[in-house]
Amino acid sequence: MTDRKMTQLAAPEAAIASYLDDLLQTATSSAREDELVIQEPVSVAEPVVVATPEPVRVVAEPALTPEPEPTGGPDKHEAEPPARPDWSEEPFECLIFTVAGLQLAVPLVLLGAVHRIEEEIRSLPGSPRWYMGIRPDRDHNLRVVDTAEWIMAGRVPEGVRDNYRFVIRLDNSEWGLACDEVAQSFTLKPEEVKWRTARSKRPWLAGTVVDHMCALIDVRTMAHLLARAEQEHHLDLS
Image (cartoon, rainbow, N blue to C red; front, side, top):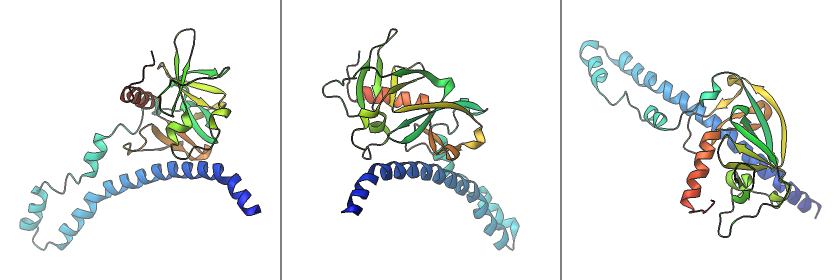
């Protein structure tokens, strides 16, 4: 009975740890894929040069053959969104916030504002689970996202919304991410981030900061994805 209770208590923490491990593995896998892409032309060219006793005739043919050049990997990477956002070339300030125990970070240069949730945010009938509702503001209405449902779909612990205390506005967009707590800001050097180069899966994830055990959000991509989801679900949020 004791073991069963401990397993039940550890379930949310295990889900969070599993998700963060998945984020880190995604970034690591992307880096390894890039290394393989860079090494591919070398591994193909070496046996041709070594195995050819007559370089005049045999070596010239592979050199003129178009297949070894575009191996597929480089083309796919070029077609994906840029791996490094424009704000990542120099050291930048970040703000860490937590969602269901998972730490996320946004660059301060693209942080619109931090709002405190002072009253219940009610969702519209028929809206998707990730959409919490609209938070009225003096200048405009802010569309509030259930961040856990948006980025941890299928691994969301129960009662997540009960812990939301703040809304992080994404740049100058009309979207805000609900979160539990907001921590102090800190400076990150570009080399301290494990940047993702393959962005076909979770394109909002710019990279991971292993030292802080957090995921770095690509703010503009996140706002774009939310706006596209709004159109796809035909949400009337005006």
